Every structure is written in structure tokens, then in C-alpha cells.
Image (tube, rainbow, N blue to C red; front, side, top):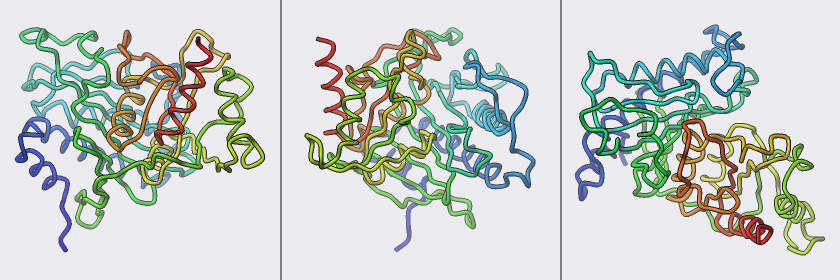
Length: 338
């Protein structure tokens, strides 16, 4: 049986009850082409001279890898000219990127983390690109886009996805109609639909968390993880496995594929920050994907997709994955807050 390509899938979605606008379809295709280019650079590694760090730092104060900068430029250049975007925002840049006047403008806003997990680049571990699409507010019509136009809660996203550059390169996508996965056929150069209707099991015995930070966590977080560690000799009478890749794309891809819970909680080393991960570039798109796959995503007390953002680079605590485990750790936080 002949498999569907990404283009065929998107056209079908566009035709079925107008689930997908034509401009959004073309925007997703441009992002997917940019991800192919990034995948090619990643796969070349040392042969392409793209490994190692630069002397520069990004807006988060993190040392930039060469591929961080390359991937950011690829996404900006690929999406500038298409006519589907009003503006873009990147985790690597301090402020938004307006579409140059020489190009037509559209009604969508694109946010992306060009290369998530970039600390793993030089050691050949899976990394990825995360993206989120919003509609520009109606109030922005006839004027230049500004940062406040991007500050929309995650439930207003019209599409979200990630590309993972691993043993295979995959694109995992939602347009609000469930979650699907495409694998890059390198010989044909096309994205092929290989995973239809991805569903996260409600229960799991697998958790992803950086255990070295346990001493810094809040009591409800410590309680939940300790119960998992206690296994069948503890009150839950259930053994857990732990997996931690330190690449959000890779950890989330695993739980979307086979279940699990991913946690990156608040810790007391930076008590004034609610978390480490970025709401707009990482938490919102991943939360949309997880919810569309039947999972749950919270910051410990609230649904992530309901958080009203106040800054482009706002940070957040993240707990997402299999519904019953996320509900349990969230309830522990709610109980502690009362």
C-alpha cells in the first residue's frame, strides 16, 4: 500500500470540513522543509564543521552551539518570504523578527526553538526542532506586529510540532485533529506518514526527570518521585523505570510513542523563576501535542495551555505525559498549596 506524504495529508485535512486553512498548510510545509535542511546539517556533524560552541550567548545566557545559530538562520530565511507569516519569534533571539517589507505578510505567528537539546549535539544524541503557530490577533490588522501580539495562552495555538533528529528523522505534528508522525525518506526527500493517531497510554511505569536535582525540589515533587523510587516495597506497590536524555524533544517523543511522564519542575536554586523551560517555545507546543495524544500537561497546579503569558521568554515548570501520573503529581502540588 502506498503511504501518504506530508503534503497529501495536509491537503486532505484542508479538504475535510475546512480543518486546515490553505495558508497554514503552506506554512507547515515550509517549516518541514527547513527541518529537512537542519537534519542534513546535523547528520553531517564533524564532516560539515558544524560541531562545537561559539563565543556568543543567546538571550537566555546560554553559550550557543554552532548548530543553534545555523538552525535559527535556516528557519528565519525559509519562512520570511512565504507570505504566510506576520512575524516570528525564536528562543535564540531577544525580541521578535518582523517579516521584511520586501515580502508579503500573512496572518500567522511562528515561534520556534531551532535546536532543542543542543548540549547533546557534540555527543551524537537525539536533538530536535520545536515549533508553534498562532494567529495574529485581529487588533494587529494594519499595523506592525509587536511582542504583545505573541502573548497568547497555549490553547490558542492552531498547530504545533517537532522534528527529531535521531536514528531516523521524524516530524510529529498536530493541527488540533490528533497527533500524527512522519518519517523522512532520505532517498525520496519527502516526509512519509508512518504513525497515525498517536495515543499516550493513561498509565505508565516510566518517568523522565533529572534526579541529580532532587534535593532542590519542592516537597510534593520529592514525594511523588520518592514513591516511584520505592517501587513495590512502597505504598504504590509499582516499580518504575527512569529515562533521562536531557533533550526535551527526545524525552517527549518517547512518551508520545509508548507512554511516560516527563518532569522539569521548579527548584530552589532559582526560587524566583517558576521553572527552567520556556513557556512559548517548548511547554506550549509540547503540551498541545501531549493533550492531542490523550495525555495531560500542567505546571504542577494549572493546565499549561491555560497560562496567560506575560513575556516572550517566560519560564515555567513542566509535568506532562500519561494522564494518571500527571494528575497524581499535580494533586500532590495542589494539596500542598492548600
